[in-house]
Amino acid sequence: MARRGSWAIPGPGPRAALPLVLLLLVGFAAPLLAILDYSFMPPRTFSLTGEPTLENYVTIFQSTSYLSFLWSLALATVTVAVLALTCYPISYGLVRVFGRWATVLTLLFTIPLFVSENVRLYGWVLFFIKNGVLLGALKTYLGIEFDSWLFTSSATVFGMIYVYLPFMLFPMTLGIAMVPNETRDAAFDLGASRWQVFREVELPLSMPGIVIGFLLTFVLAVGAIAEAKVLGGQAIIPVTHDIEIAFTYAQNWPLGAALSVLLMLVVGALVLLVLRRFDLDTILGRR
Image 1 (cartoon, rainbow, N blue to C red):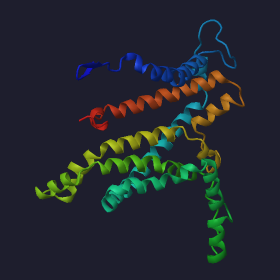
Image 2 (image 1 turned 45 degrees about the vertical axis):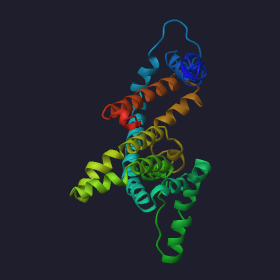
Image 3 (image 1 turned 90 degrees about the vertical axis):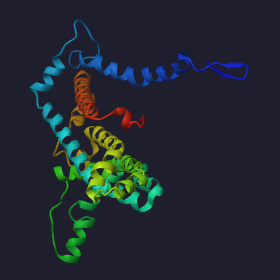
Image 4 (image 1 turned 180 degrees about the vertical axis):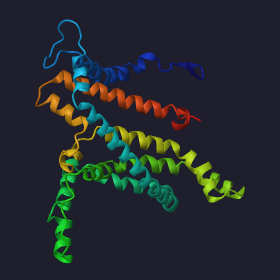
């Protein structure tokens, strides 16, 4: 309880957090518990009668659904790796050239997010399709004819890199902008080489933004589905496609719930494994 003069001002008690707790329970915990409950129901039913069953989880590993998990994890990993190599030099250049305005300029990369993802992906379809914008121009002006690049795994990866670039670039730019110029200059004054400054000063101090960008991009990329449908032509079947089919066309909600639970467990375990290798207090800026 804080005091101001002779008056006692009551501080916020546990009841002040009650609305937030209720919001988290209703909006976050309740749907997850419902999905978990559905995953133990008998296949193609909507009620839990008798003992809970593991039949849905057994079906996943007896079928080829586990391959969808591997594809989703592989695509997400490749997307994160390519974006890390692409976005770090861009972020570093923005911060070093534009200074405090780098974050504002980075917001320009988020403008495409105001347009539907499907609309943007179909724009790339028109660009890469045979006799489309790119291949049609090459054929008309250069006399070179190429087969369409669409409906391949490479097109799927390209779409994921394009869609999730802002989610890697923005946190990474914020992380690099957190490095004080004074610290960098002090390292140079002490005789450190350019590589030593990058390795010992810039990279560790910018790590919070880098880690957040990695995790955010990976979690979103694992759940990608539009890129595989629109650009990939389902040459690769991600796990989210199997979940969609189970919940819609197959009307097998328990199987879809089991796939969702496994996806959450796998992604959650990988995220926790990564976070264990870093100091959360440092990442969150507490010290």
